[in-house]
Image (tube, rainbow, N blue to C red):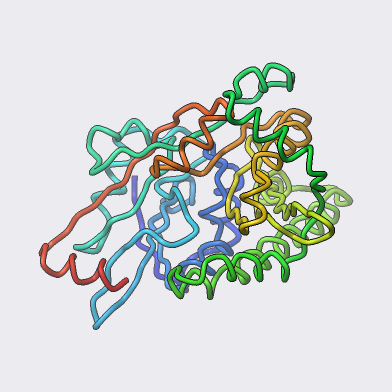
Length: 327
């Protein structure tokens, strides 16, 4: 298997996105448009036919090139419509051309967990077509908070990009500057790309011939979602999520003090499980968390563990500490 190292301007984006669209791992983080926002200098490893691809989240500082896991991304690694064996993964890992790297790989690279630096936990609520069954998995605290939110008359609706971003920034003033600078471009890029994909699907459905790449573009749809929770027509909590073939990803939530007091996010997660996951046959992907308090919230909905890992190579150690401290 010949694996190529592709610089940013050498990547064939049509072939790349076709592979991501058809990948057995249906996560959105490795789409070219997504990486362009969160890691503008990203590079890649790929086989000649793009059957297997691996994003390289490149950063440069003081003339030093290194790979570091990007913001707004949970899992990267090797993507393919075929299975990724330990041998294939290790072949890609050995081709990483940088001395310093530290980033997460995806859950379908799990055959490689024994050789990874750190195993991490994601939480998911498994699909069930019966909402009654899902709610049986709620703990007493979750049930109590949903009832509390219902009693105060909260309303769930579609939020606008500007009001979502404004709420997030006002509630996260101490967060890193790069989170603030990329949140709106990421949300806008997701909605733009969804529009483009839908247009391509419509055009291709009218034609007589469809290539494998065309079919991948059509079938690999993702649907960005912006939900808002309102009290007296004021936005008190919101969520930017993304729907893929098999899952709904709870990507960027935010809640102000009123939202926390009225348990708005409990109500919103219950709403998504009932009206999206149950109806469309999707797993609810909590997108975390290794933080115990956040994990407790997800487990209250009956979430189960799904493991992924990080890989790293750090030479020399003193340089790694400096680069990661000021990334």
